Length: 115
Image 1 (tube, rainbow, N blue to C red):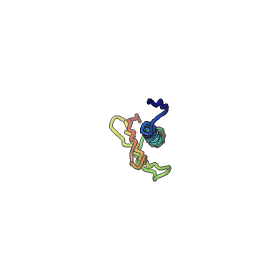
Image 2: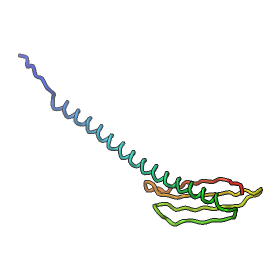
Image 3: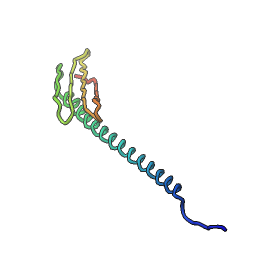
Image 4: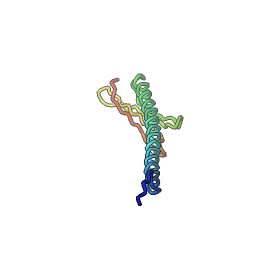
């Protein structure tokens, strides 16, 4: 006697559920990495913008040696310096330190400008 059964066995259903679960977990893990990277890029962009603004500000000032820093504000710490070089050139350096994902990172901009 033959039985004609249609449908899935219990093992087939369990394998399908496990595969779907693994796929969903991979999607969630990938999303977490993307969110972390987006926050890091946002912090780096803010630090770069602050360093660019400081370089422009120091470049607009008269030629004189100077140095300074700002305390942590908005999660950024900034240190800058202007060093006079030979041939009426000044070297402007700005370093912005920020925290992203629990790590401390820095953006450093250095340029030479005529006096």
